[in-house]
Image (cartoon, rainbow over all chains, first blue to last red; front, side, top):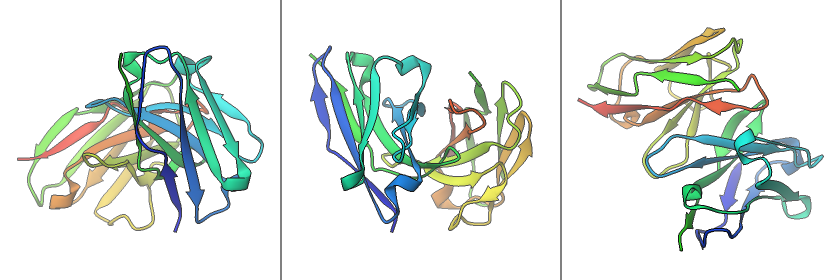
Length: 117
Length: 107
């Protein structure tokens, strides 16, 4: 079945970077976009950006421009989201999701990133 | 950027009730509107895409309607497993965005 499996929880200090992985299985990885969405505790969903695994093209929400980088390794069907210059407000669960015309299905299980000194 | 506004932010209802959640876009998005359900501690799940198309495997008590700027998600007869938070999302722009969510609670 189609599945996205994300890497485990991370704890980072302010100013550091974090790189979250998202491994796809059950479909052709290069045929669908990968999107990243985050959710702070008790808050709503915040879309961060998308990546086309075939071309490597990306599009980022303005809020994250300059701080986020989305990449992939097609040989292992894995997408990555790296967020730099972390601050406490970046503490959240980060989700990857397969995108088709920007409808997201399925989603990964989520990765908790905690930013704390 | 396109802003999405849901109403109400929270809603109390009983099993068997008919419930409607509204989503309004700050500009016309045609039918590029999706609905998701999220339960505590879980990833969101796609319910409805393109405003009114039911995602495979989703019960038929869920339905969506609307176009342009105004959309609705209707649950025809609430079941215990439907108590969750619901989000709309516009996919008209390549810079997509979500509504703030509607929490559906048991009365």
